[in-house]
Image (tube, rainbow, N blue to C red; front, side, top):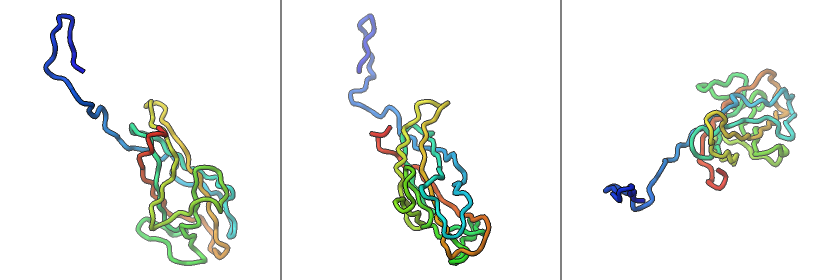
Amino acid sequence: VQAIDDDNATGSLYESTVGVEVRSFLAFALNTLTIPYGALEPGQQNDPLVATTTVSATGNVGLDKSVEGESMCTSYTSSTLCPNSSTSTIPESEQRFATGTVTYASAVALSSSTVQQIEVNVPKSTSTSTQATNNAYWGIRVPASVTFAGDYYGQNTFYAVQGESAFW
């Protein structure tokens, strides 16, 4: 585009090729601080998946998210991981996730060694007052061998991933 004013004067600065108008800014807000699995006894599981984590697109692109996690126990801290104990630890693979309320058996098992993508397909936000959101669904199975009662804690880490532009 080259501008010409009403006196037929032209500017000397113009762009002859298409440039980048706005760079991608990948940003998100995780709106759920804990995954609410509820109270379960040994041998029980969430079936279908009922707990949700909600993510908002706060940048200017659509997004998906990736996740990895740790085992759960009553003594977990970020500096003290859970012991490898069948009676007091829930392995990370007992946590399952999906993009809908599917059965526990058909959901994807969480891993501590492999970052896995969740195709939540959050469109890019077009308003700062109402950000685009979407959910991932979660469930957990408490192994029957767990005999230590209490609240179990662990850590799941979420990463923003730029979504496919077709879902923006």
